[in-house]
Length: 96
Image 1: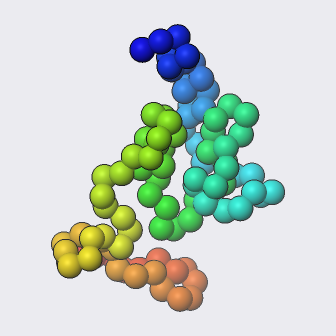
Image 2: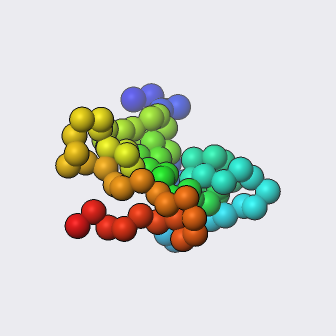
């Protein structure tokens, strides 16, 4: 690792601590839609955003995926969530 590859732990801490959802209403909605000068994700969150993958990707500087999305993997009924409702409050009933 050379000097330009070093990760500044203070910059990471400044971007992600305290653990709050930062919302900038002048930006497009979505957890991965924008960052501020400190590197904090500021687009708010959409119901289907994969917050863990997005946060880990921001921490390591590249796309990270656990291969699990809101909808799950096609053909594997054990994964994923029920579809969102078309009307408010939009949330589906629990899978159990």
